Image 1 (cartoon, rainbow, N blue to C red):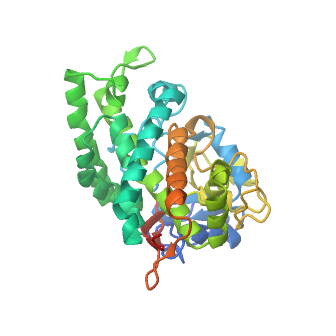
Image 2 (cartoon, one colour):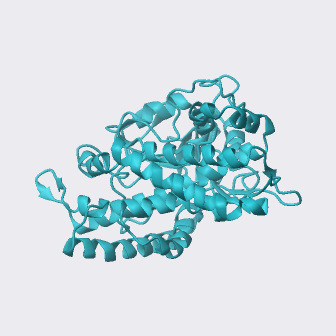
Length: 403
């Protein structure tokens, strides 16, 4: 599929067409989230992007809320991934399913990520954070993404599936292609690569079940029928993508902000009990993901008529930067009580791993500020970010004084 554009549907008002590319936003290499803020400020509440086959884009949190909570009209089937992958690519479950099938795929994770289970995994995340800090604290510097962010979430998601931690070296390059390449052929190949890896383990767990998430998925029924092997593979592939990428880059995005804000560092170092509330505000301000929906019928969104089959791209960074939803949204205020922010989505597709992600982020901030109360971007270097399905931090050099 060409990224250059598509024939403009007749029902799209010409004044609502905007020539943007989510994989190449202006300023995206310097600050991927703020690059979406610039799009938001310069665009109407709803506009049409011809690239990648054509998508409507909404820029206001109220419209995101409307779309996320109405799966009957705004379907996730074959959507959710941006740009849409070729039809032969296996569906990612439960992300790309609608009711009633969605509940069957989600239920095992509701059990496996129950509060007691999350508590155990959070303890392991804290151990990994401490191990990583011990490995580089004395140097007075680190490349945060490679030395911390790419270790903690990955260790946890591999534990959930009982997969060898060393296999992350095989998986991470493919995840990067899936979330940040606009080359659909390369993305489809990477998806197949991860699915092939998962298929090996699904076969092993079919023969020798355990207490892991793969074994749990193999036991479910979709209505009255057994789950298929292909459905288990796609579900595990999706969860691996989330664990190998989204949490890591959320860590990077938050730590980049803190590195450039001594006042916010001071607040957390002097009052660590503030961290759970501060995390809500940091997440509100730093959403990183893109998802999509497809209209199942003609509908109006933000007063704009759309047609059945139209696709909507939902860039979550704009939800936290919307001045109609948050007073002075660019300002990070730890006394703010941000409710219903959308980093983890909302409605039936609200992230199943949100409590685990919060626990990992909390462990990172608590243990980091115990040892490193003041830090910054390493002089002479700079942070590098990237836009795409997930807004990523590609390079984050941090330094501090060693006590």
